[in-house]
Image (cartoon, rainbow over the protein chains, first blue to last red):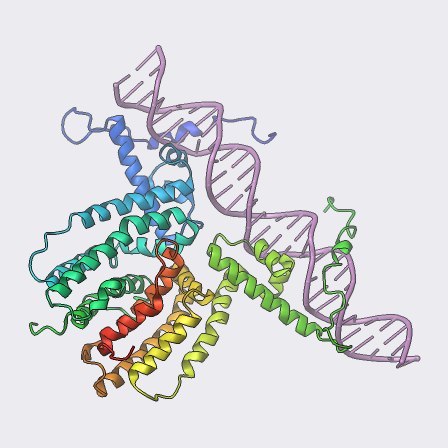
Length: 231
Length: 231
DNA sequence: TGACAATGACTGACTAGTCAGTCATCATAT
DNA sequence: ATATGATGACTGACTAGTCAGTCATTGTCA
């Protein structure tokens, strides 16, 4: 209490930072209404927070660091999120939702099942393995037990749907005679397992022994569908 | 300095805690020499720390909690470990070493390759999935990126050996005609992937959808070795 | 053998530092 | 003009790590 009788001396100086003009390069149309700027800031915070949480985990991440990375004051974070915990949960949702949307917009079943699965694997390679989304998977594995809400959400929105989708694909493959192993439909996890391992491998062991995920998935599909004759 | 003229008042009272007799249940042989007691305490700390780290992760674990759980004062921890971080690293080593020993003491290759792999899978089921060792795997996935030393160690001692062993097994299987897919030897990860997924699944999603890991592994082996005729 | 001294394992109150969350103050779009 | 966004200094709770002091055990000597 007795520590700081004088206040309001320095703070005004720092003010120089906050966007002075807030217009785009053209003539006079204000490109940033308050709402727009706020949305941009929110996005910056989400981006920065994702980066930090992925790199350090929930407990070790400092809000100060997130704020700094987002180019925002700490207080600003609290204009957008209730607290660190709900911020983390919301974050995971924000990043996952587009993934779910993608899952729901499955391409119509054209061509062989193998082709379908290959397309799927290709997308997975490109958009998950070695990307921030891949790190998110690791983050969920890491923090899931301490954030049941996140584990629940992830299971409901991604895992159960993914498993169901894969099961449908496998059953189609069995019906068409492309897949021999009938029991595979009971454990679609087997179909996905190498892909998940690839994700984890990349973020843990890539330094020691890089893994050619694409080739591995190809071998795995050969195992399930039988060897291909084409290159 | 000027704060504590009085001391030595309370501490003596707490002394009641430390083993009063230090003998075993039989007659008069002192079972706990100083060295023995110290070793017991160290073991208690390791056990407690493992529990806490697995449950909360590195950053969120409090040394006070570890001490309390181990029935030891906080200072005691520092008699055995340099600091929290090296304690964590040492811990992982301590738990992993027996696993490595187990790996090195592989049973002599008797019977079919499938039998060998099945034995292996059986052990894995019993001793890893759903046990503290399984949680350790998750912990390494979670903290590995922040503890390169641990990821290194784990890769060197467990992963690379495991992969090498599996590869040998697969090559044997190919040579004996039990395994068709020759490329499998290039990615032994595929053989192990469902087991790893089972470990992770149990600690994340067991509540939502329990997974019959044993059955899943059987199906997976059927996929690799071809369907079995026996029940 | 018994008494006494030396040892060092053990303790827990304490320090120094960290960080989530608050709020008085200021800036600015409307 | 003013309502709302934004700021960052500040607070208080919390915790890793320290260290002076205690005492059971061990070693030694008469």
